[in-house]
Length: 406
Image 1 (cartoon, rainbow, N blue to C red):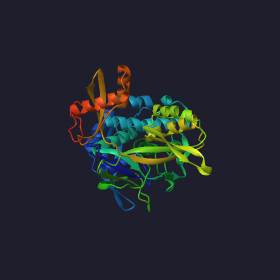
Image 2 (cartoon, rainbow, N blue to C red):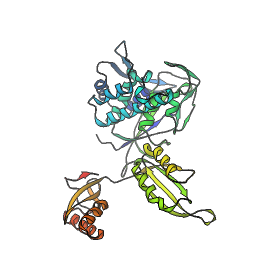
Image 3 (cartoon, one colour):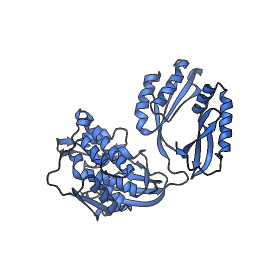
Image 4 (cartoon, rainbow, N blue to C red):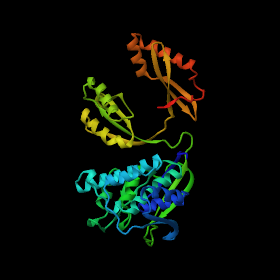
């Protein structure tokens, strides 16, 4: 299944795992595919059905997960991780489901002040939540969804009774999962569950209004309650990618710095790359009162933003870091090794739908070979480019079958 679709989640009325699953099924996911995925993880444990309902006058699909076992075990994070690892799920389904439960485990551990491995799931570890999470991930795969984003989440207000007693809304796990995301109360009662919030935080990025998409499908998933005047539904909008797609989510961290010893900058940049930055660079600027300075820019995946922000504060003298969410559009890349007198050099190829658009020898390979041979780097670079051309690695050529992914 192609994964060039983007899904946007409208959680303005709240979010729960069963509501998200209902919305994806309503948008066209195959219920049979979802059932088979859940059966692989918890065989013979649940029955999953879906039926159309109305919520405040709007049609939506309501998913019902019926446990078939009377005694549902309390599962640890390690138990659930083991179930997913041994279930024989498609790789992306397993990875996404594991990421969701990892988010839940992290939130629960933080709320209760315990180690992640010591977390015992209660509501979120019940069979219906396992079915919801695995079902959502299987539905995304069936729909060919490669990237997701979501809007502001309504979390509710008031108090709710849980396995831990009466708690304020949003419950502590939801509040912890919401850190870094836009939320509002949106109404009374518990509108966002830990499972629903964890799916958004693990799989969706960025937090944004409906992005520019060529809309292909829309689905609505219903919650259990029918509240007059407020449709208790989650909507999912699916869009086909145009051009090179909707892009990968990325975060740009920046800081203007005028008082760092310039001899430290090479180490700062190297450290940021070692810490997981996709790229890091400096731009000379002039600040107020004519002070010379640099803008430090760091591009990274959203998952690394926190660690890299901490690294910037640790390794530089800045007192603040600004942050922006971007979408990164990158050509697919591959490597092919070419023989150069005395060794080999990997050539990086950018390609578009299998046609080579960019050709460049990897400079680290060039530099290492030049050092080993005692030759100038420019000579080895020229030789590597000539070897690439001789091997047919030129713009407009078809990507060779022996190319390995970058």
